[in-house]
Length: 450
Figure (cartoon, one colour):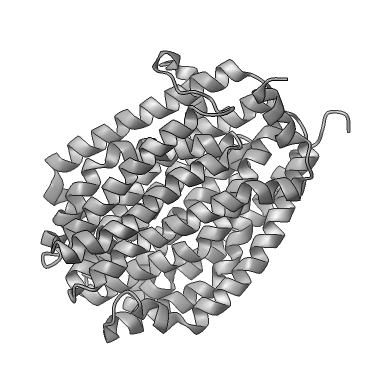
C-alpha cells in the first residue's frame, strides 16, 4: 500500500473526534503562536512611548489583512479542492492544483508589492492614517509590502499542507517563523533603534523563514510535491480556486475594509488614542479566537476528505463536535477577557485614554464572542465542501455586510461609543443568519443509499 492510500485510510476510518483533535493540536499551536507574534509588534512598538507609532501598527494591520486575504484565497481555494480530490483518490488533479495555487499566489504577491510602492503615500491615507501617524505608517508599510510575495505564497503552502492532513509540517513552518519574529522585534525595534520600521523588517524576515520551511515540508512524506511543470493555466482550475477561496477572500478583504472604516471613523474625531485602542483590541480578540480557529482547521481536512469520499455522516459528526467544544471554550475565554480587559489593553499601551477606550470595546465584544463557535464552524464546513454561496455570504456578513454600515450608523448616532459597540452588533446579526443557513446545508447532506 502506497503512502497516499495510507493517508486516505487515516483520514476516513478513525473516530471523528479523535481524528479532529489529532489534526487540531498542531493547528491550535500554530494559531496561538501566530496570534502572539502578531501582537508582538504592537507590544514592542508600544514600548517606544509614542502613541502615533502604536496607531500606525493598527493602521498597517489593514494592509496585512489584504495580503493575507490573497494568500488565503489561493490557499483555501486550492487546498479545498486538493482535499476533496484526495478523498476521491485523484492524485494527479491534486498535484496540478497545488502547483497552480502556489505560483498564482506568488505572482499576486509580487503585483501587490510593486503597486504598493508606487502608491505608498495614497495607500497609507487610504488605510486610515492621519498626518501625525503618516511617517510611522510609511516606515512600517514599506517592509510589509516588500515581503508580500512570500507572505502570500507561505499561506498557500500552510493551507495546502493542512488540507492534506499534514498539520505537523504546517505547524513547524509557521511556529519557527513566529518565534523568530518575537526574537527579532526587541532586537530591531529597541536595540538597533529602528523603531516601527524594525517591527516591519522583523515580520518579513520571519515570514521568509516560514516560507522556506513550508516549501521543504511540501516535498516530504506523503505530501504533494509542488512542481513548476504541473501549473495549469486553465479556466477550470481558477474556477475551483474561486469556489473554494472566495469566502476567505471576502472574509479577509472585508476585515481590512472594516478596519479602514473603523480608523476613518475615529479619524473624524482626530483621536489617535481611539485608533491605537481599536488596533490593540483587534489583536487581543484575534488571539482569543486563535485556538478556536485552530480547532476548526483540524476539522477542515477531515471534512474535505470525507465529503469527497461521500462519508457524510462523518462530516456532520465532526461539525457538531467542533461547535460544542468551541462554544464551551469561548465562554471561558470571554469571561477571562471581560474581567481583565483594562489589564490586557494596558499590556500594549500604558496610556489612560487608550486603556479606557479599549477596555470598554473589548468587554462589549466579549458579550457576543461565543457566537463565533457556530458562525466560524459553519463557514469552515461550507467552504470545505464547496458550498460557495452560503460560505461567502457568512464570511462577508460579520466584517462587511453588517459591520461596515453599522460603523457609520452607530458612529453618527453614538459618536466614538458607536465604534466600541459595532463588532458586537455585527456578531448578533451574523448569528441570526448563520443558524438557518447552515441548518439547511446540514439537511442536504444525505447519502445516496438513505
